[in-house]
Image (cartoon, rainbow, N blue to C red; front, side):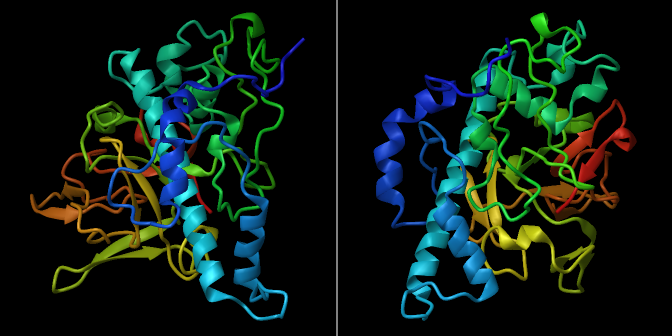
Length: 338
């Protein structure tokens, strides 16, 4: 009989985090994100329902105190706590990929490499490298829990915890006995579907595969709070770059920070997580922002959620998203937004 997702022990990443739990609790009063963040929490849980209520109340202008008055300090403190807890999720996922890489010649998880026999999913190997399959591989192998895939500040009602993940003989697999992950795990939250992943990750194709490894490079973003869909990046006469979004009221604006722009946690290949307050531009904490080289040979700042068309070489810029389709060529990939 198929087993549910519930575990009695710890995942690999959670075991690594046991020593750091006290540090996480102590750091809730300090939300600076430029330093190395605490390890992923042991026993990651579902999104904090109380924190979710406060976030929704804030967005709706609801009072937070019994006397009917909003307590700005309390709202800010809870928002900071959500942000920090969310950062531990992102760091936990990045750490789990680093542990995977230690056992797989330095490479982060790729379904095309693991399921070469097609026991889990039939079809073209490259088409298997979707967000759902990558995350499901980590869950099935005990590297992360399903709870770690959901942001503590999730704002999209179609993104929910997978509470019936099958760890043994998943019925949706081509060959359940020899399956390597549960293919029923989903990342697609569009068109009324329910997705089970909050976070964006680097598109692992083309030259970006060079970064889908444990390179320990501080400017290579690999996991983050997902961002809005970007229409273009405009450069002013003074060199200032501005990302233009396709819609003005993206749900991703409600995850962290002010609700009229994107702010979020970004995990990098050296293991640090930093809180970014702009889609493109200087880092809040003064750390070096990812750059790319354009066709003119000049360096420009890299918008993490946009595949810049003026890239000197295709797929040589960072591009993070949730991907429901994959393939050998970039045109075969499909990213989803909001």
